[in-house]
Length: 278
Length: 307
Image (cartoon, rainbow over all chains, first blue to last red):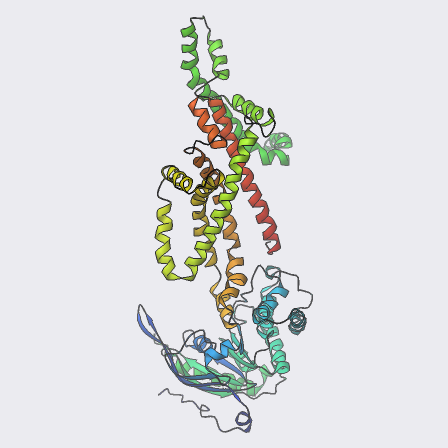
C-alpha cells in the first residue's frame, strides 16, 4: 500500500457526477508489455470514472502510464485485462463511432496540405458535405484565432499556431471527448500559458469532456476539474484530486492559497509514488 | 601596409573572377575543357599507329604533322576526336529530314517511343508491386526475393528470350522492346515506393486510425502523398534505365531502326564516329527525360507546399 492512500479515490457522492453520464468508465485496467528486458507493467489495476463535461488531467513522471491510459481509451492500444467503456461502448466501437478527437504532443499536420485542407481531412474521411466542411473550417479556425491562415502551409506557422490547428482539427468533427497527450509540452512557457487560457475558454464554450496528459503541476491544477496522479513501475493511480475552481478562471488564480494547496497535494502525491533511491 | 599589398591584387583579380556568371560556370567550364583536352590527347595516342601504318601501307612519305592531322580526321579511328563526334552528331541530326532513315532524330524517336511505353509499364508495375508488398506481409515475403532475383540476371541474356517468346505469341516491334525496358525499370520504382508508402510519420498513421479511416483513405490521403518525393526520385533513376533497356532490346532483335540499331551497325562496320554520335544522342535523350521529370517534380512540389 502506498503511504499516501487515495484520499478522494472513493469520491464522496457529489450530486453533480451522479446526474451526469459517464464518458469513461474504466475498471481494473491492466496492460503488460513483453519487452526484451522482460515484462513491463504499463498499467496496473487502474479504475477511473470520468463524467461528461469534466476536465481531467493525468500527471506523473515518465513511464507512469499516463499516455498509455489515454491510448487505451483511444483504442490505439488494447488492455491486457479489465473492462473499459467509452461513451457507453467498447473502446473500439467508440473509435469507430468517432467519439473522440486526439491531440498529440507534436501537431502532426500533413505538410502537403494547407491549414484549411488539414482541418478538412477528418471531415473528408467522415464524409461531410463540401458546404459543411467549409463552414466548419471557418468556425473552428476562428475558435482557435487562426482566421486568415486558411491558405498557408504548416511550415509557415509557428509551433504554437500549428498546435492550435491540430486542436481545431480534433474538434472539427465535434466529438464528445477530447484526448490530449501533452499538447503543449514542446512549447515555451509564455505560449503555453496563453494556450492554456485559450483551451479553458474552448472547454467552457464547447462543453467537451477533456482528458489531458501533462508533466506540469501548475498546468494540471489550472486546467482541471479532476487531477489523476500516477506513479510508475507498475503504472497506477495513487491519488485523484478534485479541483473545483470556477469554470472561467484566469491565470491569476495560480497565486491563490487554494491553488497552492492543491498543487502541494499533487506534488506530495508525485513524491510518494516515486522511488528516488533508483 | 601589409593590408594594402594584400588587398590590391585581390581586388584587381576580383573584377572578373567575382562576376556571377563566371563564379557559377567557371568550375564547370574548366572541367569540360580539361576533359576535352584529355580526349584529344587520347585520340592522338590511340590513333597514332593506325594512321602511321596507313601511310606506310600506301608507301607515301609522311611527316609527324601529317600523322597528327591524320589522327584528328581519320575515317575509322579507334577513338574519334571530339570535333568529329560533334560534327557527325550535328550532321545526322540536322543534315537529313527528321524521318529519313539516316537521321538520328528518326532513330531517337523509335527508341524514345519504346522507352516511353516501357517506362509507363514499368512505373505502373513498380507501383502495383509496392502497394501489394506494403499491404501484405505474406506478399512481401513471397514477392520481394523474386523481384530482387529478377535484377540479377543480365538483361542481355534475357532480351533474346523475351523476343523469341513474345514473337511466338505474335508480338513484334514496339511491344517486346517496351517489355524489356519495363522489366529493367520497374525495380527502382518498386523499391522506392515501398519506402515511400511506409514513410508517413507514425503519428499521422495513428491520427488516421482515430478517425477510423478505411484502407483506401489511408492510401489516397496519407500513404500516396507521403510517397510522392520517393516517387520522383525513383522515376528519375528508372527513366534512364528504361532508355538503356530499350537500347539493349534493339541489339539482339536485329532492329532496323533505333539508337541500338545504330550502335550495332556502327560496330559492325567499324563506323566509330557514327557509334559515338549515337552515344551522344542517347545521352542527350536521357538528360532530356530526367530534366522533364525534374520539371514535373518541381511543379508538383510547389502545389504540395514545398518551401
